[in-house]
Length: 242
Length: 298
Image (cartoon, rainbow over all chains, first blue to last red; front, side, top):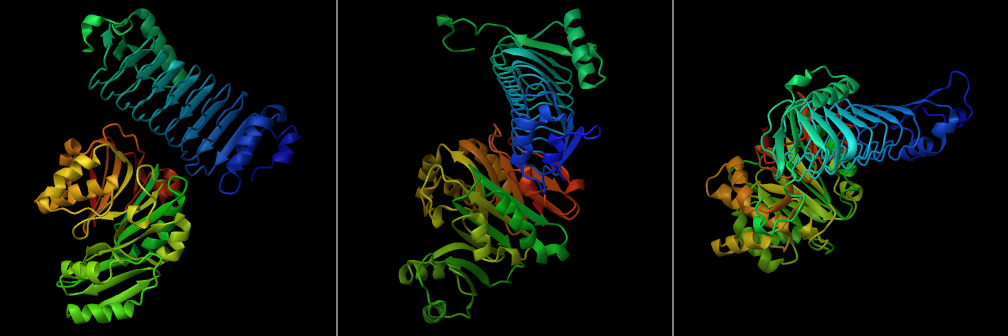
């Protein structure tokens, strides 16, 4: 049972606080995380029985360690800044959407648009990610232990996506400067995405991101996908056939 | 936006609890669909030549026993009626099409929501929790059911526009999403003598699949054919007397989660409608992949 009052006056032992969403309201949890978590001295917040609730730990702005035990709904850790959020379960659509910094770790699978538009931070998904993973990525890093669905990294502008499994259709369609590293099969590349040779620098990046994610694949097994940049400028002669 | 729920019980000894398991699933989808709700429940089937018709009278006051007297005179048969608020289930050996025709002429205010040997159908406008209570959904028994909570985006909020939609016998469909070519589908089906009751996009999909079933396709083949005929966003959940089937469009725009254990297959738009189910912690959970057809038989 969460005891918010006690948390506001922390004693030496009280640096971990539990919320049980079968009894405590989501609003109380997020209010505590937004307003009180940082100044309360609580360094770890444990969330039990999330039962698919939306927007858990959304809009964090402090370096709190949040451990969620169970499956979550839409937008977990959306807009995350500084916090480290671990979901010991699956995540609904839009996990870590628009993350600015910090770390979000989904131990199960993630639904559509995981890490969409993330500007910074690291999103780790141990299982599969559904369609549109990393869509419009703007500088964050994503490591997926499993496979990703179609249209992943669509229009991704900056950042890196490491995919340890396979990718379905249209990977990296209309990519800008983001780079994708994929270990398994790619069913199809999107428009303007192409395979490029792996350099030592690429292998170093993959090794570093895998280490941060706690995954132990060989960086030599990954292929690099990046933008051919043929969509960067308008070509009247192309007649819209790319 | 809408919410869909489906539940198929693998163990016959659980069938008395079908409604009790389902009500929190339906109510859990209230935020996705607060304006209407409905469900089709597949019960122990009646035997040939019996059929069941689910009837709906809306806000009218109907004397159901005089309706039975009148229809018995017009189409002689033994009729049984079970009234549940403004819904009633009429069971008889007479030709269901003849009864539909008779109702259209003599009781035009009464809608026939479903026809079959196993299906009972309830739908109405209002909050899912109120509808569940109004028709005592908690007490429903059966092998499987398909339910829906609606947030209308493309046609009116009326009982007729609520889901599930039905066509033919023992077939129903619920839909989360929106079709972009329902009028095209309709223009294809109407010349074949297929009649529509509403201007709702989902009805076009329902009648398309049912037409394919009548033409000899099995449900999977009909759905496969639908990929090239139906354009738009959809997560469709369908029921027949033997089967429950789910399919999502190529872009998987509308969510769905499946939970499967030895005892049941439960489907909902979101996990929060499944969290209360027994043994959910040990269920196999997955999201249906785009354009992959998943079905389970009773």
